[in-house]
Amino acid sequence: MTYKRPLVIAHRGASAYLPEHTLAGKAMAHAMGADFLEQDVVATRDGVLIVFHDLHLDDLTDVAIRFPGRARADGRHYCIDFDLGEIRQLALTERRRAGQAQTRWPGRFPAGAGSFSIPTLEEEIRFVHCLNHSTGRCVGIYPEIKAPAWHHEHGMDLAAEMVAVLGRYAYLGPADAAIIQCFDCAELRRVREQLGCRLRLVQLLEDELPATSGLQTIRQYADGIGPDLRQLLGTGLLADAHRSGLQVHPYTVRIDALPPGIGSLAELIEALCREEPVDALFTDFPDRVLAYLNQRVAGPS
Ligand code: G3P
Ligand code: CA
Image 1 (cartoon, helix red, strand yellow):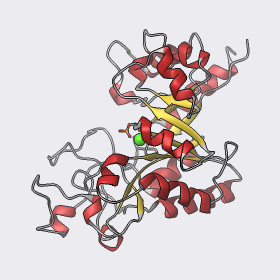
Image 2 (image 1 turned 90 degrees about the vertical axis):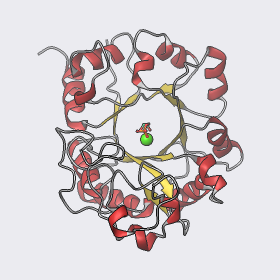
Image 3 (image 1 turned 180 degrees about the vertical axis):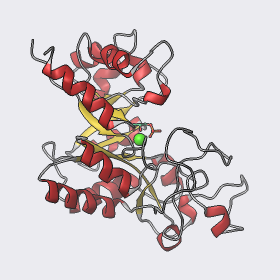
Image 4 (image 1 turned 60 degrees about the horizontal axis):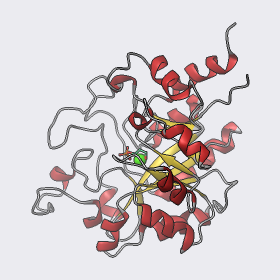
């Protein structure tokens, strides 16, 4: 039986080894052989798209020290309250636990170490193009529209800006190496139907398992779903989605945070691929996942 290796999406870069959404972490993931590099995207006050996961800057930068008095009433410093020139002054570091000084992932890159800054989406795209040029590879980008409703409330059309940026770099159609993802169903549908975007679209899923009718609705505007990988364990979602014509790209394979009841990376990947393989998966460990998937493709020696 032939077996198609799932694509490997470097989740925020090689984030098990270098701080998330740093160009260094993207270069490492590229060198490890990832097929796609993920970008979480939010907007600055002056409307520039940056590659950053959180709406606020507090758990990944030195914003409170560098810009005293700029927090909102909740004590947080929001990306959308800072211009790009200010964002550029921040030191980006390994993720800390929310509101605390300790690192979120104790076995990973030490918090506070290194010298990193937040890239804009355009800087990152140009960086990926340069890596593709110098290596002869064609690694794709996989940007996520973060909290579109929140951005609309603040006067920003994040989705439209993202589609415009991608278009400037010739990411235009389904054969191009870019996939847009979003948790907000109405916004992703709008990307397809109102913004006229022809790129591949993936509907991210949070808690609820969609019924078959829900999958068929998603298929009207998207090419795939991105469930939490735990939604695939012991459920029929993978087969149901494939029957609905949808690809399945689960998040997030982490060796240092395996799901309950799963004892190893091999066990997790087998659970995701045994009956029929997922089409792609997000991981913080692109090297380890690729090593396992490639020996699986090669079969017994
Ligand atoms: O986009 C897939 C996965 O990254 C979704 O979760 O919170 O890491 O963006 P999050
Ligand atoms: Ca994401």
